[in-house]
Length: 329
Ligand code: KG4
Ligand code: ZN
Image (cartoon, rainbow, N blue to C red; front, top):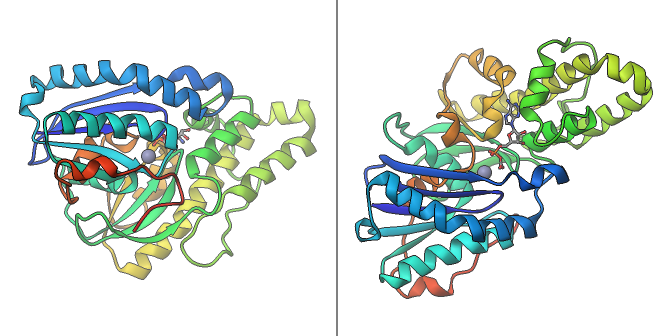
């Protein structure tokens, strides 16, 4: 069985997955301590991982009805993510593996998101186009095989889609993380009330949400406190529509470019109803894994480990983590 650990951001995750890709347990301890700061505080995330990880590990083993004797491969997220947070899970993974002289797989987090689709029972075989839209990343990939180096077609140049939701929600006084709350508010609003930008003229398959966020800020200021409060639902609906359209423009382009007939969607933003409705109208098969496999989790890391090259003991002891933007190749 594969034991996998994921601590790249603010979720402490441990999973046990069989070599065939069946999930035996998938424990996710979400750290709510960051909410009052309006974003993840790396140092706090790291300390929380340290205190939550032992219990998450025991729980994952217990739920799987397994002991460490059943583990044949250990995997952990190596990056990209918050370095201090990654270090906790990565070091723990190496330590467990080393103590038993087991092989260890260092997994790329984004490979993990794509590999969520390779888990049983709803296994999706490549080739397909993948959209990952979360709080930490937004990207499009041409997935031709199960391996760790999918062809990246485009990614965000500034904010991630979930981050855009969160920043908009914060501006509208909805708290953090605010994607789901913004969606609820948007239900009562008119998505056509305000024409927010979608970076439609930007060529290629990269995403940008910074202009949109600024446009909302200026609109709220222009309306003034009372009017902005009265039009909150319209602001939310129009803002959500712009995020969804920013994503959809690139998805349509990528489908055209690759000729893909299937699209897999991952990341926390995949929960968004407006995005799901837009995706359903694309005319291609859209596969969205269950929510627990869309957001950060360790089962997807175990899944990716099945298609990564593991190092044998003690070679992996010298491996280090990498932050966002410094992925080694
Ligand atoms: O994948 P995930 O857990 O992100 C990372 O940790 O990177 O997803 C979290 C993100 C947050 O930004 C959250 O606001 C957003 O996904 N999100 C949503 C919805 N539910 C979660 N955004 C829009 N609509 C939703 N219903
Ligand atoms: Zn993620």
